[in-house]
Length: 75
Image (cartoon, rainbow, N blue to C red; front, side):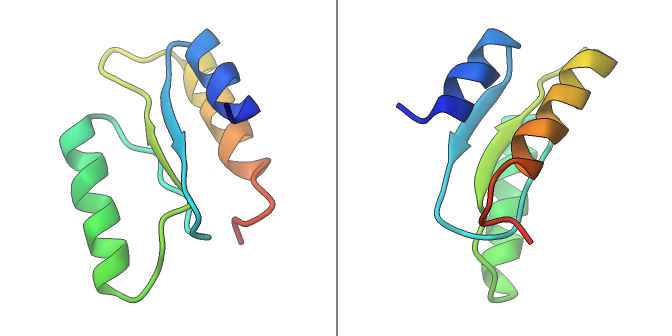
């Protein structure tokens, strides 16, 4: 299991690491899927699926940023 996925779960985040280099942080699974589709339509590849969920806190958003910025593939 990806260490970032374990950290995300501890903070109540839904995070799945992917192979691309474009980070995604969204509020809602539907928006996540639509965002990933648009990234691919423009020739990019998503680096992750990251849903912070409804009613999120500033701490969860801060942790989400740490997760996506720690991914060496994200540029």
